[in-house]
Image (cartoon, rainbow, N blue to C red; front, side, top):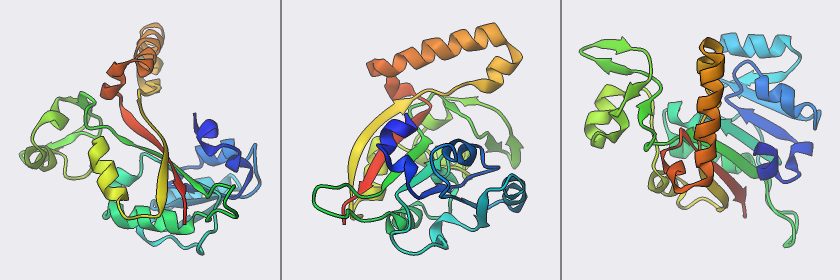
Length: 224
């Protein structure tokens, strides 16, 4: 899915924005030596660096890279955590290269963010001053002002939310869909049942029921 969205740009210069400990960087290194990471957590920066990855500490709203530095940016479940999501996207678009000619495309962003229609809030909630970890059902279906009181630490997005946050940026939308997860945690505890669940849910991605998927998957291309 990511490579299809990259459409050949995986062999260019890549930024993993919010790279964690470098799992995706390791995979991209199979396609290009020019892979860089940005990570907020200093412990994750250290872990990724010890694996030989080129990682800098920073925030998405202030990327320490020059204009048009990258052919491809991956942002996997990061945008929901930043202080200012519009500023973060503006920065990502800034570091994507512009089209080299009328016939060639610009740099691309591969974006994953939480889908508000997913029946569970996967980041836990705050209730009566205490944090409750886990997958909490139906929280994201509450009116926004109530939902955000329970989960002020993370955003969720509708399609309209994403369209608004991209509005005014020099981009075009290449592809959008919703996807279900890999459910590795469930598989680790209940292998057979977990794999069956994953198979069934991922089959829904080919149906209108993908609207209830875990995440939005968008491919964005810079046009100017």
